[in-house]
Image (cartoon, rainbow, N blue to C red):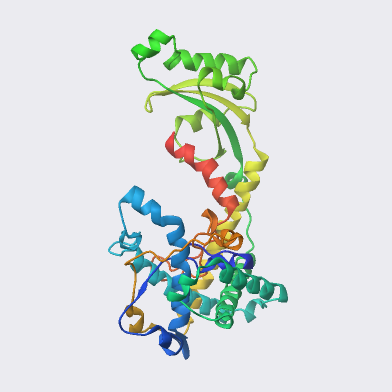
Length: 391
């Protein structure tokens, strides 16, 4: 499920997601006057819901379509199973879009409590997003949604206000990170497979197994850096950071590395994983990795603070009802993504960090668990967790 972004500059990406082809029930010309859902006394029209869906479809298809076909064998990615049991990607997308629309309304209802309004700069960013949309999408997009600029601006402004409320609620939390939660150390290491030598390796005099590990260790212990001999010995080092205090991490690389001091080297065999490790502790207290971890821990606590408040808001929110015309919008049946070769279109195409971000994120039990997906958190997870779980 995609995440909320805390910046208005993400607005162009917020609505990106998955696709549909119009059903037989409602004509596109009637979308602006057809009620797709109600939020208390407010009518939410099909043109808004359809635009959010189509915009999302375009970006998701542009990024994922070929991958689903090449790696998973689906000629229509929307028919692939989603993370929700019993739902296809298309069905899941429709549910997500409606949850997004609901969450946008609930958050906007509480804007005044947090003194949140859209600034002139926010509105200018939205205007630029609308311009980028017009320049970045082919004319064929109008076959799926043909909303005018005024409508798109209105929808993105609602979205932007919701994002700012979400951020204000998170930032109102008084939280911090303890040493146990955040102190990190960093290892650089080479992993050498403990395989038996092949005839070709023996004939070529290639180092392998413990001999290769010993050669790496000797060079490293003499003061050389991995980079100085990696090509010569045919090895590649990896760098990973770990929590100083992590009782649940029982990986041999972690338990041996956590006691090392900066600059120390070590070689040991991991029988369970059939390999040798040659390790150098590059920092027994890595300031940069620790700072990133502090941000990650604090942000997680802010998310938990937001979730607790948001759940209370959902319990007192006006009733939300999705109308049957939404069922007439069917997902799948063909790809609508059309690449535009202009410079503007290239800039507008989704990237890995912005392929499908939304302001509305339905939770496991339709209760709105929202988290912020940040580069810092992603990097920290990659460096801290990947090796710890795999080594």
